[in-house]
Length: 474
Image (cartoon, rainbow, N blue to C red; front, side, top):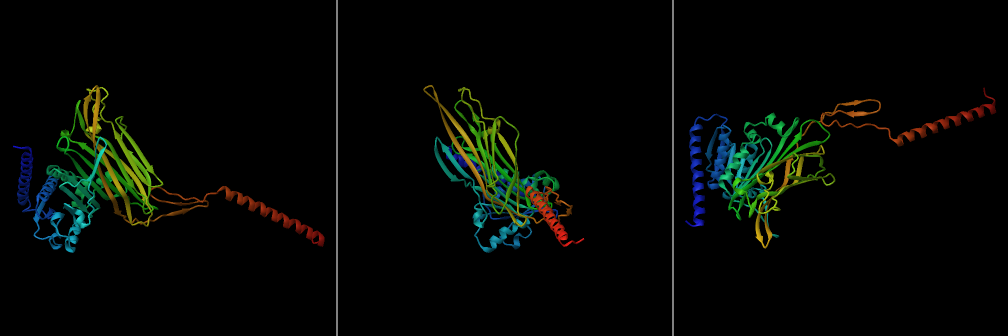
């Protein structure tokens, strides 16, 4: 069996297994939902291909994992009438023709539930935001957009703005990543039509409300060394708004960046070492609509294998973070010191950014929210008592051109208490206080006025005495 036929054979077997599992789950579903409760989640499917079937497998598994009941409906046509009772719609943009009714139907799902749109979602004016790849070998660079076969946009506007993206070459990993996102409590809140206070509090804190969740997962398929999937990158941007009266609109950006090296994607010996993460970068720009950064808090424990460089530029309102992870050491070759555990396994970084905008702003925007993770693989050779090191660099960049939320108006009722020398505005958030302060200039002016007044009175009294004496007035 030649290699090409073997790969094709294994791929077909994998797809057959996925379809068999899916058929079994749907059969089980048909029995369990024959007497389904009214709150059963209704999944609508329009079209049929392996991407849709793989996505459905992940959705069904995710709901089953959480103990949710569901019903699967195959739609004969994609119309507004056919989708009115759906909680989830799964379809493939590459199977649809763009017209006014299809566009309206696609987007109407977002206000009632969740849209799972496969393929080229930009066809329906949904930002596809594909990952950007930079490959480098000994100075030779190649850049391109990563457009894997399994590409998914997840969208909802029911409780908050949900923008999810999953990119993978593997149907198995693609399905698993759908389960991972659906298992999140923030995602589950869509189906119960409320965000539990415990979830909101853990993500944002007291008196904050979740407004948006932008999340992506990209799996790395190594075509050079291992010929398989070797790693993944995930980024979460969760935006919360302060719900109490204030002089400004306040926002909390709860950010997480994770990477994971799969066990089969790493080895390190005298001749090869990788894949491992060498560097990570996060960038976000708030300089729009009068917005300002108030505070930036990286949440990372001290680690000798990790260098963190954080740059907060208050004038330009830009936050940039660079993390450098310790790589391998070949000084005692042929003995090799492996890369740090963080670099060769998994690691998650968290940060909180507090920003504010003028009260009359109706939207809050983050521009060019970008993550960049640098993976590396080393090849070592020995030539004439010298080591030759070849470095393979693989950069994955994921950029949201705009993260945007609609501001929830907060009614400001500011009780004012006055005293003789100050006016204090009572607020429940940051206790902003404005005072009438006595400046050096005002003190000097007061002294001048008093002295001038005294001189004027003295002048008048002196001339009055002279006048009385002259005219002998008693």
